[in-house]
Length: 107
Ligand SMILES: [Zn+2]
Ligand SMILES: [Zn+2]
Image 1 (cartoon, rainbow, N blue to C red):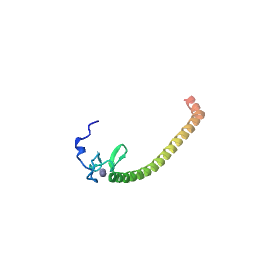
Image 2: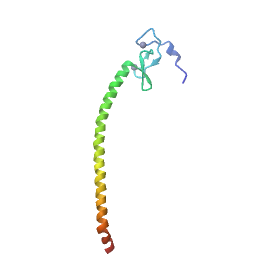
Image 3: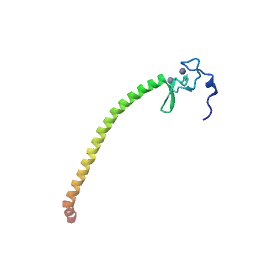
Image 4: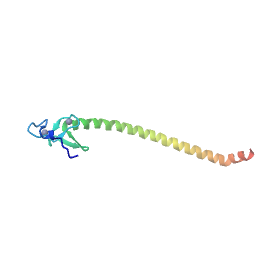
């Protein structure tokens, strides 16, 4: 991609009328100069959108943390279930090895 939009040289920064815009914010679709955009996760984004996004991501991470603890509980329940199944199976195998053989032999 070498095709920088030719219009960009004529477009001025939203905050600085005397400065050329170098990037268009994907959040608010406004043009900004080099000073007004910040690189964030590989994108050029304006300060106000970055702030808004960081607030959203903060909320997201908070709910994600809640989800994580739920996952921990679920995995603990799952581990308990697996352990229970394992011990039950071992118990059955012990019973089979002692009683099951006779029972099979009698048939
Ligand atoms: Zn923006
Ligand atoms: Zn600017």
